[in-house]
Length: 478
Ligand SMILES: [Zn+2]
Image 1 (cartoon, rainbow, N blue to C red):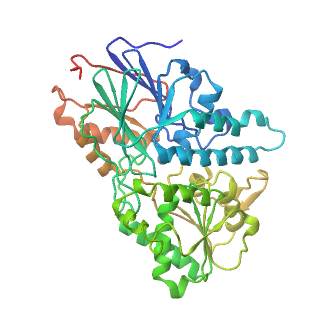
Image 2 (cartoon, rainbow, N blue to C red):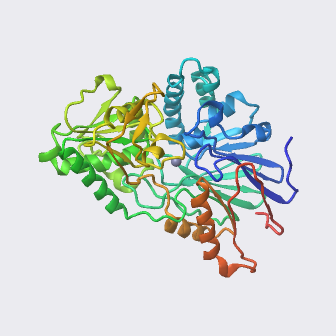
Image 3 (cartoon, rainbow, N blue to C red):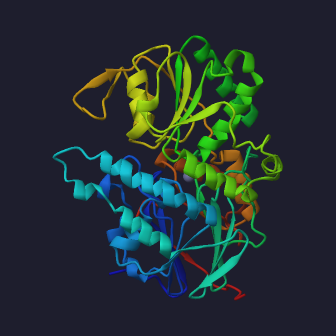
């Protein structure tokens, strides 16, 4: 049974994604309405263990479920919620999120089933089937950016969040109280995306990601230069470069950078001298989604789209690779392969093939979640376990490096955005405990001058399943 909050009290709690990165799922309760934000899985776990704590809440009471973007830690348990629980609410996401969700989760179902080792209870490992996915797909509704919808008296509007194609921030209004949920967001100018925008109306509560805590990113141009120079140096010595990437989203940004660099260094790298591969069985399907939704990208890239000679998503130096069998491993090459955290699948196969050679480089460009191989590899272990034979270890002599293109705000960008929103209640989610704790301290000290005034800023960093109750006394009903 659910503990129902006081009539005038706004309640927030997470079933996942609080004081951790992974399995995002947050619940809002106010004036008898229940809203769920995101339905992800935890990439470091498998099967039921990867789910948010759905048993802790009666999902049949949820009116509305909003999905911020297609990444697995925000969307991959949605078919489970819709098909395997008593959830009966309505589900919304943007058009591109829905289009990509379909293919991505189809792949996710396949990868997790292939990953089953004999002797393990595989029924427990498959959260849902292809049929569940297809049925859930038909019941998902879409929302356009900047349009407002209403479900059971709950109004909500989608805004650009940057981060990946289709990512949205949701501003939700219940009985005059406005809440902004950022999902994952970025504010830096990107090669292909619009950056996150500030909604025209104010919010009383902001639920904001804290992935990078108080860390500062290097300027984008420096990171691009580092990336291309590091890769160039390795391939000119005959090494192979593995870039583990999530199949879609940030991978396209990396491809735009590499394709341009190869084009500018044709004599040395072009014409197949050092081939670049994008190894994903989703490559072709998802490229067509990128083409279809060009109108949702930034002005700069939209201009180039009009002309097939300049269409930036028709890569001149990158070829698609469906599997390892069709790959001939001669000489230096650059391989973008999924999944991004090297848990299993193609990127893991390439890691195990290439990690014994010190000439090779594994370059991590995304955010690596605690407990995944990508995070472990950054500690430069002497050896790694083989995914197919866990008793066997493989020596790790390759170079390992990290240059982030994860498209999450850093501290300065996050603080600036939080100040622009001006909410007096800040709820931190989507961050490991330490960076989140540091962000909380930095925010409290930033707003310390308001302490004791009527504009005092409250910052919360709750753990999973811990309630944050906020009283709204004299809310002006719109
Ligand atoms: Zn994300």
